[in-house]
Image (tube, rainbow, N blue to C red):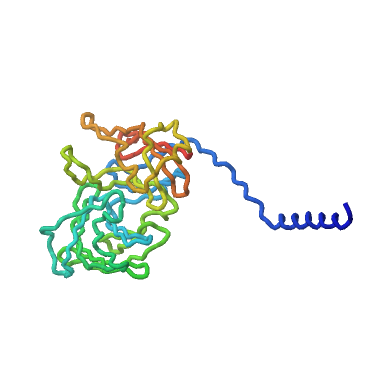
Length: 336
């Protein structure tokens, strides 16, 4: 090799080394290891008075509240949905007479419930706005809100509500008793870290944030209204007790082909999970009328993808506390 060839070779090696040093080394990501099986119990109480938010990653109940302290929930994402407190058996009816103060009775109204799936197109208050030629039009309908009942079955009465509009992240709503007493106008501001902001139609300070920030929880233990069917196929609303999903990122499915013990991460990842909030629902247990007790189906396994993207398998193993009181769902779960 002559001197010129040697110099060119050395320059080439030097150039390669200099270019290589400019690139950052790939980060080394450790392979995820599944966790052990964890067990927890949620104390809803024998009259199901508590609503509880649970985080799978920390195995902790993040927050609780009494179920009957709120009435309406206002969407904090990109939507304009307003939801009823389904745990109180609430229902609503729209009236296209925009004269709010002139309507003082509920005669002839047709009542509607929110769909337990959480579908925004199937909410009782959906007619408060319409999309026309890509524009949002507020209808100015007057709504009658039956506030349902408290945990002891006491009826909470009917309110009139008109959703006046939405602008710059703020809902404006007015409401009163049927006879126009206790009239209020309230502004509800969206808070982006939450799914919903709630209001109480009978409170002195109606606006509240009851749920934890949407990044902090996965499962919502609560009563809620569902539409059941008789053996003849007739639909009827019924108050059930179960588990709803965090509508922010959480998905689930009932795993029908695998037992809890055998279900693997590969099995979970092959399933088509649903974002319908009632995917887990209430029918992991059933009521035995002969023995007057609830029996839990321990063979029913669910796959859940939590708010952080991890997969879990979960099954329920109990519904009673040590004193024999119902309303204490117990479950075991494992991160895959």
